[in-house]
Length: 207
Image (cartoon, rainbow, N blue to C red; front, top):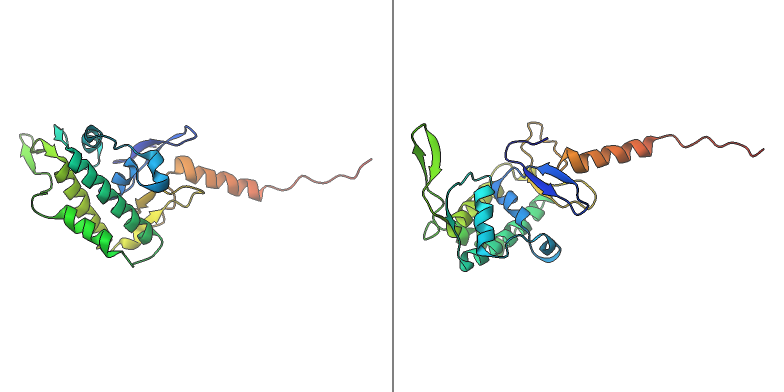
């Protein structure tokens, strides 16, 4: 089932499922990463980041202009957010100063101003264009600062599925979300539970 702000992902086994990371900064982690995450890399060229900006939960439409330097800055910020989110999901509050500094640098009010919104007739939100890569990076960094410095840091979770490392913010009212998606890891867990509870075949004596 598709929820608001969710994205359709395709796993290596070909299964497609909807995933809502719950926050802009965590959604940005879906573009790839370092080490084991490099196989998911989606930001190879500046145009790749421009395309992502237009599809992100930020709701930015219209032209996006991204330079090679802005792409490099986006990937550096993404790496810092990844490390911070993994620590937060594990219950750690010992955040490396280098990663916190990366957030401060990316969120700096000048020259990396966040995208500028305005209202058009009909009271619909639009964005001053073109939105630059630096503006989007600033928006992601500010979202990360709000998340990691806010009162609900304990709601940053990693999916409880086997060999699933997707990170999300649990926005559910009871704060009991465990899975990246019920379509994928949630259903797999249910199937394993049913299999483990199934009675063993009754043994029969040989004739």
